[in-house]
Image (tube, rainbow, N blue to C red):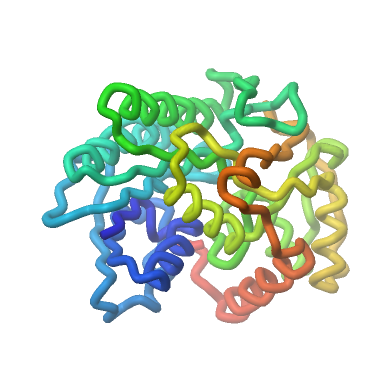
Amino acid sequence: MSVVTGGAGFLGSHLVDLLLERGHRVVVLDNLVTGNTDNLAHHAGDANFRFVRQDVTEYLYLPGRVDYVWHFASPASPVDYLELPIQTLKVGSLGTHKALGLAKHKGARFLLASTSEVYGDPQVHPQPETYWGHVNAVGPRGCYDEAKRFAEALTLAYWREHRLPVRIARIFNTYGPRMRLRDGRVVPSFLAAALRGRPLTVYGEGQQTRSFCYCADLIEGIYRLMMSGSALPTNLGNPVEMSVLEFAREVLRVTGSRSRIVFRPLPQDDPRQRRPDITRARKLLKWEPEVSLAEGLKRTVAWFRKRLDGAVDAATE
């Protein structure tokens, strides 16, 4: 059986889809602070699927055998972790501790969904797993960055002390269907604005760079990493790099929108560049992204159009 913490979220729900497709029995643990059961509604009635509303920072108990624990629980967007700094720190520390404890008790393999944010505003480019990062621990983004850095340290402590089989995925910018329209990340922000005919807000001069990986590619990499034999952190993302301004223009092209691009001051500690070195993933997992940005955006735009056409309640988005 697979346990997915945060399985009602964007990436967690796509992982649940893949696991069920590949014959796993799946239990999702999620307190729905940022997740949404709509992301899992299509699995209702599936005998191999169960949802438990659970805060993973509290005691975790599940009867029966558990083979894999996939720890995805955490606010993961600037809007979320700036509004929920204490919860973000707690799920990265206490939540990771509880999830590791469950894996240890059950003799299960454990995977931590970490992040490229552990590199902070990097001074090494592209970022290999050997880079220690350049993080402002007390800045506005520190609650998320340090929560994930602590989670990595705790995960490897369980590996070293208890010989728990662990995996650590450092996830770079990922996008796709089921992203919340107002979660503050650049892809949903730009797409929602473009589809509504509103201005696209670019910070600074838009020359900061990002790389965008489609969710299906990322989840395939996650699965391969769990089934691999490496406990060391592994970058998963798309190494194709572009500036935020270039990305804004691509969104306007794909959507056919006539929205303007407007510029605002650069937020504190916003990374100037972000691109993964995926050499390790290529060698270890025989993995690299396959979905082009144009195709990934096409699929994502189609999903966003349906959401907007359906007039989704802003309170849930």
